[in-house]
Length: 306
Length: 298
Image: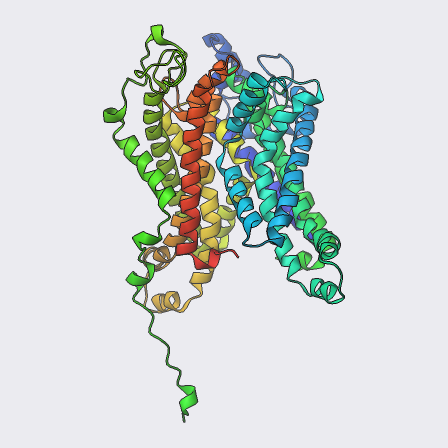
């Protein structure tokens, strides 16, 4: 077990290293980073000062070392627009993003799990086909368009919900739905296939042979076991949601991390863009590590895998 | 000594060309029709568009579609905030989506397939290096990574093609490598080694033709993802630069008129994106079942 954790942690560190290298490398090959790091309209002297300050006149590997050094100290740079450290901004927006992602996850599970079960119990029949269509629509509709149409219907015509901003639970409904929609399709598909696996197993046959009513077999015996992979996926998706919410947050002016990224782009505030991408990648790499280890704790067979 | 029971006569398989020939009647009609129409519209945009998509008439701003009060037959689907014809912009937008979609899928496919074959066939440190990079890039949220790259290099249509290509090649590399690992152990590859073929010959002549089906299936499934990503980047202002007509950009413009009820600026481009992605996904699913029986799901 110890060996497994060590190897996985090693891979994780390697991934983090490659992540930082990728971001460092792309910023430097695509032009003078000083042009990105100074505010638009800076003078030649300013650019020279930046060159010196960030050590851009030194060899590449020294520059990378300095970059990593400040990263390890939690220094993601300073935002031009807000004049505060990027990490501070990021952490102040994180709770909003997590709240949005949690509610969106609630929506997606509320829609995805029941429809997935329905589809698995009625394979090839009406509900299964309707579910397939729903999953296809979920994958084909861009979430920002779903958001715009929701605003059009519920804010402009019906005037039921506020179109943008944050503050009340009402503000959460539309962005959470627009964000959760895509994931609902994924959760539905996984619930369906997971339920089908379980329904074909021996212990379900036994439960049926015992004469249990079908509703009890599905609700108590099959559903509980089929839920494990779905909840695992939901855990990973929660982190992914925080990181892909940029368009939905932009549409609804929701003050989360995605909105921060969008502001970084529109104000040409490069440290913000770099910081948000780095944090997002790191978050996903680390969550994957945690899940790998948890899986190994639960299932000893995984530990022995190479 | 052989008894009659040892002799099993297998029905001779149909020739390869027949086995994979796609009968026209089997092709799903509606998605194909949608894609063909979009391709034709993209090709003949100059002939079809009633107005110039980039130059508007400021005296005719925010005209609604023709069936609403205030609309006219001159602007069938209305006009935007600069008085540009929505229909013409949609028509030229098809060209942007098609070019970006197909080119990005090609770039990703060529890079990913090549690296997948190298990684799977050569093994060793080459495999380790390529797969570590693949895993790291797969871990990054594709959209965020694409936004990051687009923010560095600046908006342009060809930049977007390259960015989407380097964002999505990893998906090909993973799948193709897996296939190559099993192909590598097959008889015909071993025989080629014994016959003295060079590694290059084996990879291009013997491995590549056997993985090309999977690459095509993946490509058709990726088309939808790539088109949505392009629209998203344009929507955020890091994709195709204005005044070029791209559907994502039109949605971004339309957002401002949304609260006043100018619905046509939002609904029409969105419907175009949805139709195109839906058609690509349906066709991709069908191709997957057709070309790759192993991927068939029950």
